[in-house]
Every structure is written in structure tokens, then in C-alpha cells.
Image 1 (cartoon, rainbow, N blue to C red):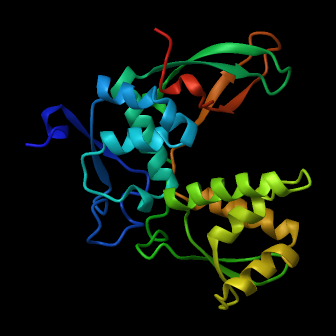
Image 2 (cartoon, helix red, strand yellow):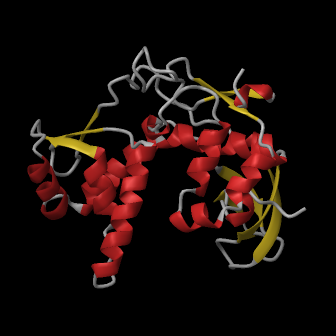
Length: 252
């Protein structure tokens, strides 16, 4: 029996239901097995070396996952569910964090129940194991093929943005960089140089927003929206769950 298997485990449902992975993939059944967090994982969380390298959360999740899977292949929405489960298995479902009111900017401490965030509803007839999808741009009437980003893509995007930020004139190309990783082809042309040129010079803002809205609508993920009522100005609406440094290191 391995060291990981000596501890109690839980089977966690994934937002994608496994539909984005090939049939022989370890996550094709739509679940992943994880162990409860121990003091060993707290060593990972407090490792100054891992924190400095920016890989502390990656190493934490890898340590907790029992299922034999290449974490780089996991789509971002499933990774979010895994991260949420890791926090609950480690420190419980209560998460106290400061929320800023979108209306008056007042700050307020709010207690969230991390088990109350559902997965987004997905179109099971649309999601496929090839991870390839199509969208027709409403203004330019051009067809793009795209894919859901993986954990590996997210890391590559983050590294690229950091590098570009050091040499830019104050403009960090976050949208176009992300689009380059999402879009596979334009009008059937999958030449990288052609696709990149299209994104940089021909992708109208109205089409870019329409695509990003569509992507957000269909991509499997956790719904991090939560109701909020401001105690200062009485504004009521939904806010995104803030993920701060104390998410994995709550105050005791």
C-alpha cells in the first residue's frame, strides 16, 4: 500500500463529467480520487522555495490526488473543482474572506460555505473527447475552431504574460495571449502564424467579446458566483468568490 493510500480518501465529481477526455483517460468517468490534507501538505504550503517558484498550489494538488493522472492534461474548470475539494478536505467548508462591494467599495468580512458552489450546467451533447469546438463570429462571419484550456496552458499563459510584462510599454496582452492558446484554426486554416496574425490584426473587438462570452458559457467549471448584500449601502447582487492567500491557510 502506498503512502497516499494509508489516509482516508474522497471521490470528487468533476464539472466536465469526464466528457472532454478520451475514453481510456483516468478522468473519463468524471471523477477523481483525493486524500485528506495532512501536516505533510502543510509543509508544501509553507515551502518558501515552492512559493517563490509559484508552484506551491500545483505541488499541493499533486500530493493530494490519488488517481494516476497527468495534472497538465486537466482542463482548468476541473482543476478549480479539485482545488475547491482540496480546501474542504483540508480545512473544512467554512471560508472567511473580505469582499469589496461593487457599488460603494466598502469592505466586509463574509463567511462562505465552500460546499455550496455548484458546477456549471454543461451541454453534454456538445462537449466531446477531442476537445474541439466551433464558433461562427457574428460580425465577420468567419468560423473558428477552439479548445478548452488545460492546466498546462494556464501555466504557459502565465509565464508568457510575465515575460511580456517585463518588456512591454505598460500594456500586457492578456486577451490576445489567451486567445492564441484557445483558437486552433480560422476558416479551417490551422497554420499557427496565420491564426496568430488573425488574432492580432483582424479579430474585431465585438467578435472577440462574443467568442469569449460563448466560451465562458459552455466551458465546464465551478460556478463561483455568490449572493452578497452590502451592510453599508444595501447593494444586493452576485459577486465572485475571492480566492486570496488565506484560502489554503485560514486563520485559526
